[in-house]
Image 1: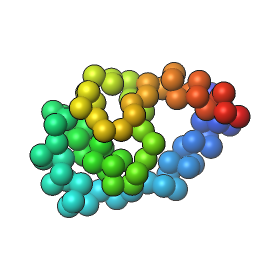
Image 2: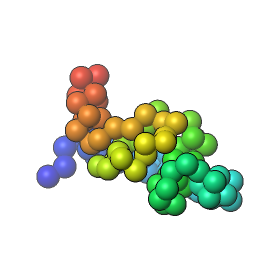
Image 3: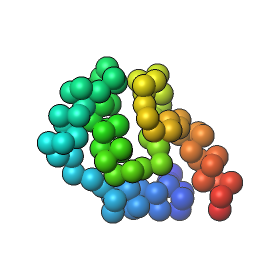
Length: 82
């Protein structure tokens, strides 16, 4: 069952979705992040100046320039800032 918070977050993410372009794809090729798909996500995040990335596997982002949150951390932050 989805909560109002979850639905609001999903709506915000959909509205702010970024198209990944050549710049992000090429930057990902030269990234220190080993998994290409994670590197693309990271480069898109940098391009959009996001506050962080939410992932269940933070170990994939050890070289990240962005803050990495696991889902529980982000949920706690969001609930604390209601």
